[in-house]
Length: 174
Image 1: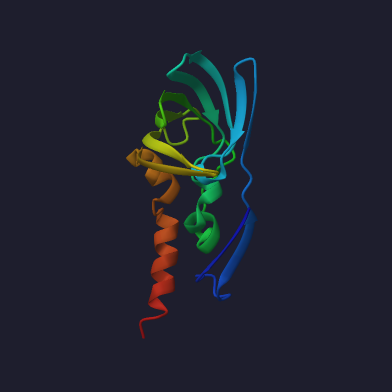
Image 2: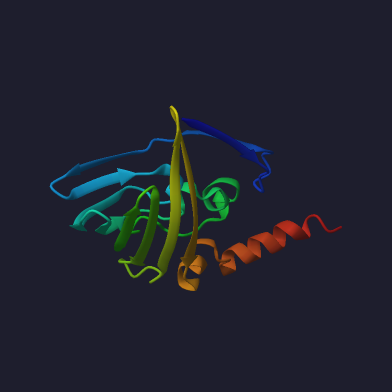
């Protein structure tokens, strides 16, 4: 599956467009797994399935990215304003999943393991699937919490950004 997007640019070169491939997949061996769900906002997720029974599963997980790969504001439209170094990003946490008939609930918690921002992410999802003849329908709704430390690190306005934007916007007020 591919996706295409475009938007205005502050860099003065007009509109910016982008095309990308969405690749999802997972591999598991002896309770150790690696997965990539492009729409999740995480990069690769590495994990160990610590508990699994008929209704519940608990995974210890680690991810290399959060927001970075899907952040159009930070890396796309305003990429030249992004002064953060994401090379050390690494978050660890846990994921609890419950399966009940055609329903699923999932709770996750991630914590920064590098000390760059000491931020935390927590999420809760609930979903359901229906099969009608040869058609499968899936619905999911959820909420995600990102701590102020994490938000400030990724999308906060640094002093350098504020000065640049102030100078940029002053050019329009004449």
